[in-house]
Image (cartoon, rainbow, N blue to C red; front, side, top):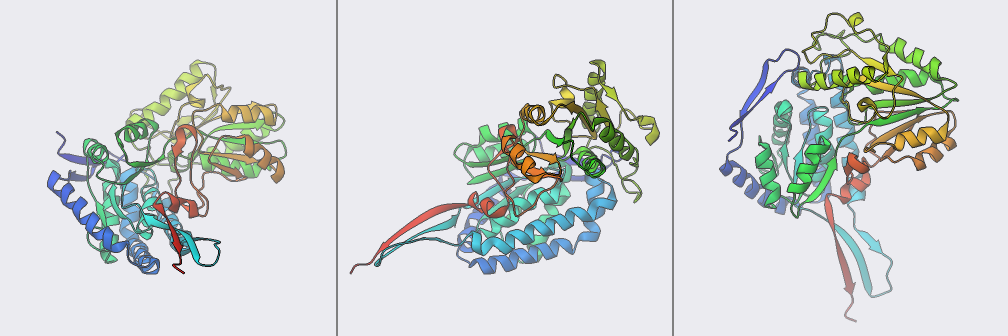
Length: 461
């Protein structure tokens, strides 16, 4: 039986954290405290909950100087980008706090005299959040803060790679004087997490991670509500009328930021044949400007992937594509001497690809992108939809109406025009097909954290 979890840095394999998993007694006590605290918390006015949640955000931001280097050590993202995650954390939390009163307000139905009808939104009870390592603060806050605002208790299980993030959430909640037991960070094994779901110890689970793991969570959740944010193979389509320089610049960032380890990162690009060469040349030139190296160095713009195994998967995808006739356009040697057994992978652009290749079908989750030439909108739509995934899709064109028409035909939870790899907290974050179920953020996100209760009140006179 697993007794502890160890986090290793992808930078050099050193130990970042070693923690014992929670005992059965600790789990039971946490569940009891959560239920007691939630019953009282649910009776607090939303305005009071908002004050405490704002204090949690402030407490987290007060730890910025410690959090930024911790992030780099845990998951390898260059330290120069650490502040950006905390800025996004604040943006998402603040938006959900700002809209809480309206989003959670009762829905009043027009009624004749002597009759009142309304629908109130009651908290679901206890939310179990299983958070990933790739954007460990951003993904967790999507559920944690809205759940608390809606009157729920939360148990957080953070990824083994980012154990320290879960502890920072606990510290922030404690500093904000959140009632004891209302939020609990637990170090759990997969088996312990499955057990919580199988015996209905929680009321809903929000899971962010791989498709395979998401299916396991779904099967284990007997009678428990499930929200899933899973994988992506997000496409971009560059039309003939696009601003090519602008599109190339933004799509390079969308493909390679965080070493490509983003669920909504760009993994495949379709370019109108009339501008294909121009776009590829611009894309390659920008890709060559990355600096691969020690992520603690402020000059580094591309750090390691999360593990040597993840890096090996990407290398294998590239090698298989080349063996099947694809061509790589980046000389990896230009980024210095990279150990082929390490977690470091140079950015790579692959052309002469097709949908029979893994690199265009299976989630890479690494710094590689395939680019194909297409004959127009119809072919681009067909290829964008030729995937088991459907998280986001981006369209690059000077014509908004054309983009919206294409977007209505593309199977994805979010359609971008001249933007990519971004999450707007005012919009619902959702996926279709194997990219997920349910939604977080926006007013619609609160619907998955509450249950409706209807009131039919008739006067006795």
